[in-house]
Structures are given as C-alpha cells and as structure tokens.
Image (cartoon, rainbow, N blue to C red; front, side, top):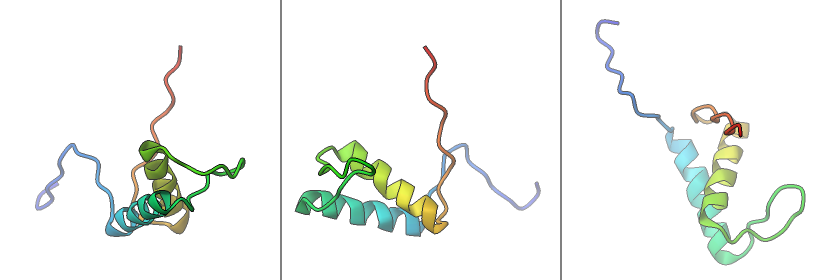
Length: 71
C-alpha cells in the first residue's frame, strides 16, 4: 500500500462525467428518452442515472451500482 493514496470517496472518470453532462443537456432539450418505454425524461435524477448507465456500457470508470433496499 505504500505510495498509493486512497480516500473513502467514490470516484468517477472524466468520460463518465461527460456522459452525464450530455444526458443533462438532452434532458433540457427534451430529447432524452427512458429505456424500454421510450418516455421523455423530466427528472434530473433519472437523467444522471441514464448518463451513468451509458458510461458503464462504454466502459468508463464508474463505481458499481449499490444494491436496492430490502423491505
């Protein structure tokens, strides 16, 4: 571990942030569509999720998804 600093924070690559930025722009323009249903995305959170998902598919540095909450 010598010579390597690691913080507890989750890290995203530059390519990932570019994808999210692109998704946010498309949302603002009204051309961002959700997956299977193809509905126009209006939610900011959903736009971020779509951007990260696209980045993952392209192989960008994106941390793994957290598991859903169990009730």
